[in-house]
Image (cartoon, rainbow, N blue to C red; front, side):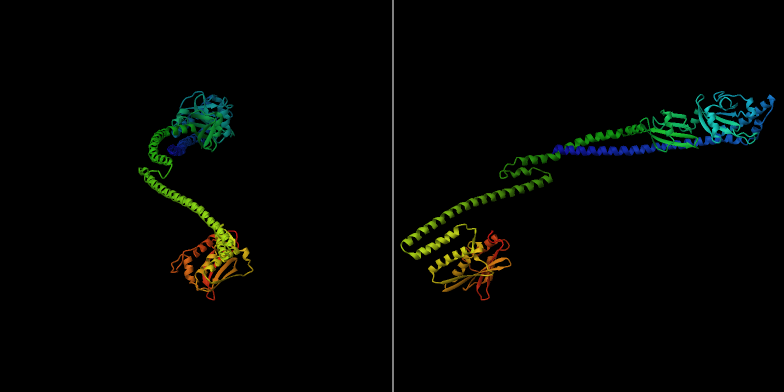
Length: 587
């Protein structure tokens, strides 16, 4: 019991601690995930605002070029004189330099401003043709012909956009470049390709110092890419290039190379995409490191609780185990010392011991009563055996007396002895059996014959039957009618003539047998009170008794059998027996 109780408590506490840890883990994980996502979204929103300002500042230059008359005039210069074309190119540079100052003022970025002139413009023939990697100098302007760069991928993509900018990374100079087609109202003749491309090249470090690019977790990644999913900048863990196409999805989670990431993506005017990735492994690491104190505290608490539970379980179960051991040693409650149950102090055990003491007391009383009943049964058996011996001895002796009376021709004595012998034989053979009604009547006749030898009273016994009942088919307990007839005879000693009538009738499937006499009679109410063990002044004699008859009828016919007294219409005393006809002969 102690082990079971201890293990149950340990498992319960372990389950509670484990459940609380799981709940804290899930809650903390959810909170941390939301916090990281909020931080990522905040950083994205901040950077999106910064890039939006940059793009607006960059777009201002191509926009103002459209309506610039000086630039349009310079671009429309056509002359065979080199000096005139030189002056036009320098005027273009001078005017273009204003836009560089505007760029620095509006964006607060140090960069380069480059104009690649369309080859269809005559002035392009008087300009150098160079790539983006030539003459890299901050806060400078260059005007080139587009001859060398026209076939490069960045140029073709930027030229195809017409009205929107194209961002790309110049890996050789580590610059993020803004390229957009430039138009002019004053260009003549008008060209669908415009005047060329305006390229703004900003060092990556210069852009990043204005942005918020701090990683939230050790393995977080920040990725800046263009609309073609080309990575312009990446900070943190390296992400496969073929996976960046997935970042434009609206899902907040992403699975890359078997690793799960928390993703936030923002679009800057559909030209740039900022993506924040945090691996769930970092979240789990933060959670584990944050929950280590709780785990340590839980383990210490668990150990302390285990020790406390062990002590408490011993203290609680020790009296119970002692009580169980005490009970297991009881072999006979009669020899058990109840004082052994008085040493327990716990209220529950005290109540249990008191109840057990009461149980032992009742059991001992029951055992004593059973012993007394067994002794009484043995005495009754011996008495019954002795009673069987004595009547048989008398029965045999009466047979001898009857034989001697007959041998001396004393017929009267022989008849009396024979009647007594028959009555004794009737009484001792199967006393509890049911007998046919004629057998009971024969026994009554024997009694009347013996009684008339002593007294000269004439006794007339008549039997009447209604409903065509055959007395031979009716069975009743022995000595049911005989005591009633005997009472009628004995209570009328002075009558010279006594009529006794036995009436048999059927009443609603119940058999009624009435004994009626014309003697002095008695009060039937007192007789019925006597039968019901009620107080009455009726004088009764010791004998077989009408109570005996009534009780045996109730035993043979439960809830039906009964004996009662009444007065007939003619004033005669009537004793009526009620028995069941259906169970007649079965009891």
